[in-house]
Image (cartoon, rainbow, N blue to C red; front, side):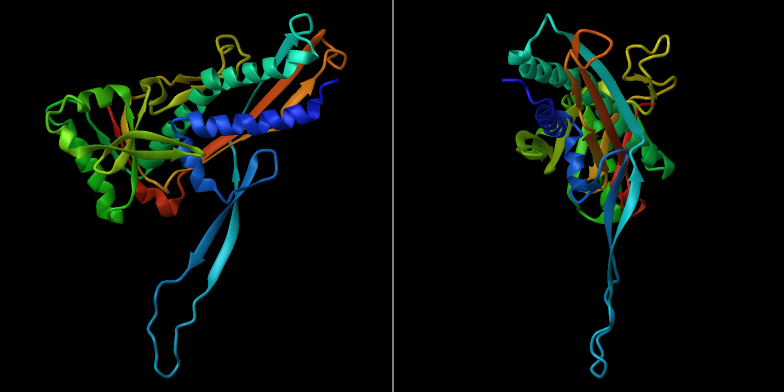
Length: 304
């Protein structure tokens, strides 16, 4: 039976979005965009609820009148990225095309797309924190790393109270933290959810600690176009002068992340005008924002 390419593309699109949510170390940030409206392309609409605080109760007039406003703000997904792949017709036939294409796209996301999305998000949070001067500069040392981490946590607690936090830490900084002799009394194992996936990970004072490769924890990246000489590899490269991020502390609801796989296009060898091959067009939109009213919920610690 001939393969239904439209149906297969739709399945791939759903599968790829789910993979990003579950395998990206920053996937938990997408839960904050749960009410986002996405209608294709590079624009999303995100709801904002506004209301007033308490007023005095009058025995003559009763309650002070309040109002509730639900509005949708438009956000542009600035990261518009894509690649096209071709699978020679001699290497695959319709009977195993779907499995081959699924493996190709899944591996492509795991090796290239997910690290890029993570890296971009962490550098975007740094940029938001730096604009507010919510950044500490520090070279991790076992002698005082515990006190430095606690101080950064309390920078947020002082503004918001004891709110649930997520601590994202580079592997190198975590290794130094792990050498602290006092650490054990602050650690526990708890659940942490990303999409439908729930993991057991280390918690510090009840807050989950997400450990991330140092390559994804830089303050700035250069976005390579994948075409220009020297940029053929695509992806991101650490920008000149970029610093290492030791850890990022976020109120759980502060960063708002969105990633969407645009319609996956599949062309069979008879439709593909250039080669006798299956052609797969992959396009990904993504971005991250820290709304102004949630900026007090972030703090970033970078190497000196």
